[in-house]
Image (tube, rainbow, N blue to C red):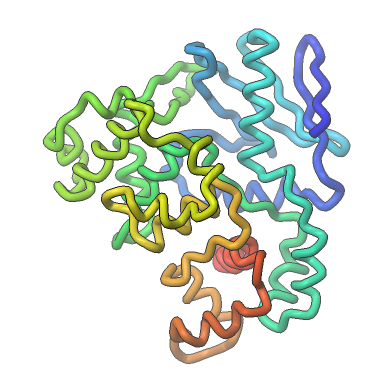
Length: 298
């Protein structure tokens, strides 16, 4: 992925089919989101890189995404780390031509993909964040999941203020590993979810659980299912959003069911067997099929 570093900004080349505006729609789906801010067609994001808090804007440029550093340019290494994060976040390295060719002839995906062409799977590059978000979202509605995440971030994350607005980082596993179940239950997490999150934090803080190691596994799902609190939906969510598995498929996802019900104009949600049958044509691209169907609900 070609990157250009200037004194004031870094530019990352984007694929010809990339549609930043479509990605912004997904990113803007909750008013409770506090890990970035959208305004005037740009994203402002805070990351902790090399132990430093780095604030940057992401805005579209010709054939590129431009990263601007309003608090002064960080080191070249930190700028490169920010660029790597953005490439991962917007899945810029995946070639979607095969997916688009498949969708052209697929009766379920054809119109959705045409309408939202250029959308990328917006990921969660940090494994700890992806696992925590997956656990938080289990068996509750999306609005309450965002409320829990907001509390979690604002109680345990780091922050800085820029132009009167406070920006937050997602808490590190090392920070959360030092907490107790009672600390997390105070946010209105259930005792069970608090235990799961602490277990994940401790495994990551100790180095037992690492993204790099998971990416080397031939069966990532099996490795994720071995983590206490991670079931089939959570494992496939993390594979899709963090590990770039294009065949990840959260089959039991309520949003997927609602989107298929609408696309197929059914008076009921499709059964798991019916979804599995529909998805036979999506082999190798189930994650993108799911993400586009989620987009159709916004």
